[in-house]
Length: 240
Figure 1: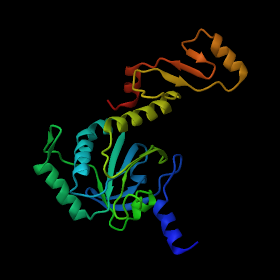
Figure 2: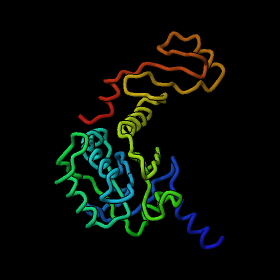
Figure 3: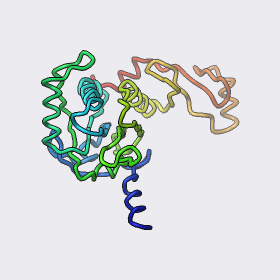
Figure 4: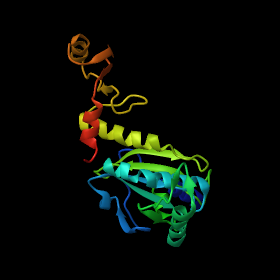
């Protein structure tokens, strides 16, 4: 393998769903962190953005900061990253608080850590550099890491596309619901919607499901749903 191929492989390397989140130590706007060990026992969202002092990133950071308490209530911490220096981060976040208004939000203080990654070490570990998009800026990657330090979901957006924060929160709640209640969630699921029961593992169970009087709605042997109360879901997942 030549040097170029090795460099490309390093650049594109990324953890996959089900992998342990790669470890790193980093300087941030909130001090040094050891990831993911500092967050063991809770969920975290590690996300990258292309650069400080850019408009799409500014809109995203204001939205994340505005929603931070909502994510924390769902036992989830936020950690940002870009290939910029610490002082650039600090100056940008101060500018956001002092000068920027967006979607009715103003005086927004970003309290979650923003990682300094000038060396691109963390960005490369997580495959956040996509050379076809940019060789010097991270794309908008999102990694959901669970309390056992396992990568559970990954979302990628190009530089020009701001993220959908309703979807990030929905995905977080849906994965926690699956864990807590041993169910799957269908397309566009939100708390209060029906959930999917795991497919039958044998012919006997399949037949039993189709004839059962239990609280299941079976369209066919492989597609059974059931009610799951919204309040039960939220009371189980969200901090009081």
